Length: 71
Image 1 (cartoon, rainbow, N blue to C red):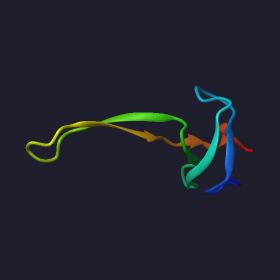
Image 2 (cartoon, rainbow, N blue to C red):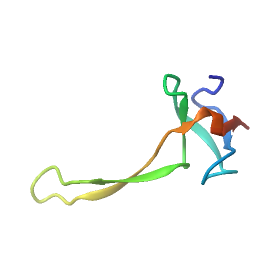
Image 3 (cartoon, helix red, strand yellow):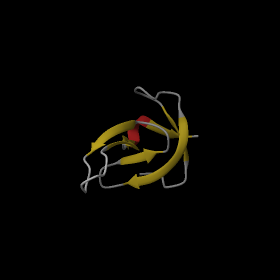
């Protein structure tokens, strides 16, 4: 895997095609990377204590290395 944390990449396929960003995390065992601001997903979190509200948390999911290239 030639892409490392901190590299600038461009997404070449999928919903976020053409978008660029920095690699926040590299996952070599899964052959994927997490790009800041791309492939965003929402997770619904339940309240952990009484009186606390639940919330929707947005996070960047991993993208396979074959779908990105160095900028």
